[in-house]
Image (spheres, rainbow, N blue to C red):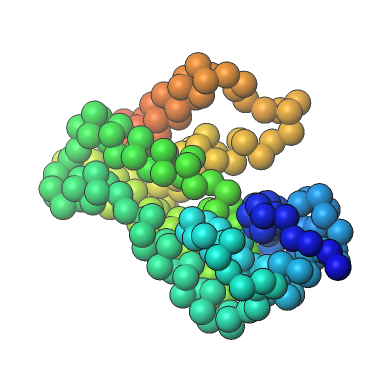
Length: 242
């Protein structure tokens, strides 16, 4: 009889997070996760009854749950329950008090205030990037996750950035059009997302930064670029229309 290694369920959950984050829910196969975890597919079934159970296990891992205390193989509790756990975890993590404070002030924020709010978001995304990748990629296959992402993750931040741009533009004679505002907000979002998360998925040939000092400089440069995107020269919209 095959025996279970004490820490293997954590290794399998880690592998599952990576695989679901790369290929999504529908395309991920049990054999892919087994290979990533360094076990046979048969061994994988000692820990998760099926793919739905494996996804549930991966979700639990993102909440820092004690996976070794679970009855194994883990059985799927129903996809609705898994989505509820994801929603609860998003609500726990997706808190940006400094961004909220800027919007509550109803005035144009200073660059230093923008910097601190963006650093708050950058660090949260960097720390939780593997969980974010998994939910973001699986949202393509699972409509319930797409709704959560729009309401509480990238969609919510996008809306907050649009509101900040309106505050910055409010005293300008020539304000950005709606499409310019949406484009600026999306570019800011992508600047933070790429630098804090997505660049880490690039191949070594294209990888930017290899040392801790590099990380500090990338973080600094990304925040400076994002702040610049919040601003637009007076009359910019008028010159585009001409």
